[in-house]
Image (cartoon, rainbow, N blue to C red; front, side, top):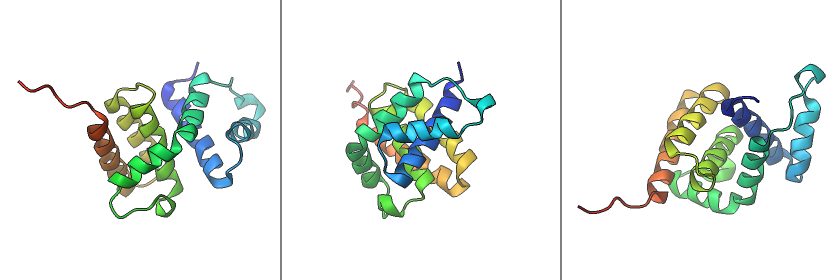
Length: 141
């Protein structure tokens, strides 16, 4: 079983493909696995499908939160990689029960690998704001 980090990389690649082509999400998953070399052909992972399908299913709510916290940035103007890293991490924070610190750290690792240092800072700021807004208020003492 691959690491969750590798699964997140695969999910990002599939979501990027889906975002580029706007084909049915199942077709994007199939196309991704079909392009891998036979010796690399991994088993289909439930976690990858959960991330991709969950992010796509919740995209209107996720995108609304991203835009709210991405000052002066519209979704279509963001680099596609950054947009999809944000979607995956926001899905994990808001709907998948992943601890926010883990989801944000993993998103920053994806940004370091697939995007730029400026993107790392941008993604960190947006995800931190999404987490702070979604987190229940601390109890008063």
